[in-house]
Image 1 (cartoon, one colour):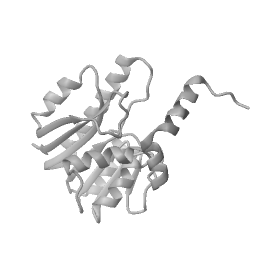
Image 2 (cartoon, helix red, strand yellow):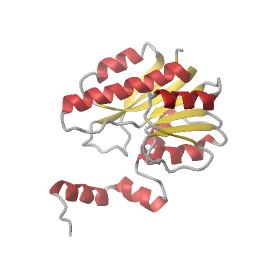
Image 3 (cartoon, one colour):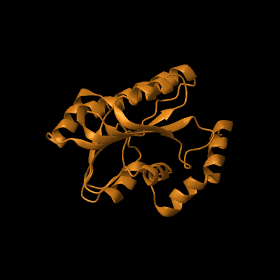
Image 4 (cartoon, helix red, strand yellow):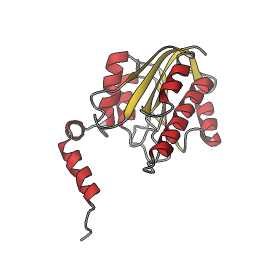
Amino acid sequence: MVKRSKSSDRWLQRQRKDYFVRRAQDGGQISRAHFKLEQIDQRFRLVKPHQRVLELGAAPGGWTHYLEGKLQGGLLIAVDPLPITASQDIYLIEGLAGDVQVDEEINTILDGQQLDLVLSDMAPNISGVRTVDQARAMDLADLSLESCHRWLKTGGAMTIKAFQGEGLDHWVGALRKQFAKVLVTKPKASRSESREVFVVAQGFRA
């Protein structure tokens, strides 16, 4: 029998006690992340029927599952190097956001159309060195913004996961020059002890 580490035991205990984990399991959602996007959307009204949406960092499919129920005939492109649980109506791209091949696939799918919304739940692989992890997280934020410059329509919106720490305030300040409205929010489904926040930007100035 393999003996679990103390950190593994703590993680399992936290999962068992987590309200949103239990709610996802009982309700058939892919993960607790479903409720983070749901709560953000309820506040900001981001997702509408028939939109064209790019979702980065989509695995395992928590946000994807929520979007499937909201777009109602829209177009959803989900990107991640890991498997994504989704219906056959979703365009799934296996790869890293920002890779040339991934960008080419997105271009092919859009075929000249522009996006209404760019979403990112990407997070860096945690090294345990806070400065390194924060720098990697800011690089992912830049990747999401680059996707907006490539494909987002004027007036479109972006929502990304970010982490409180060095560089975020400056990045958000610069973002306000590119979007009409920018807010940083932390939905109830995000664990209070986590540095995780979400940047919601609306009214893209292409």
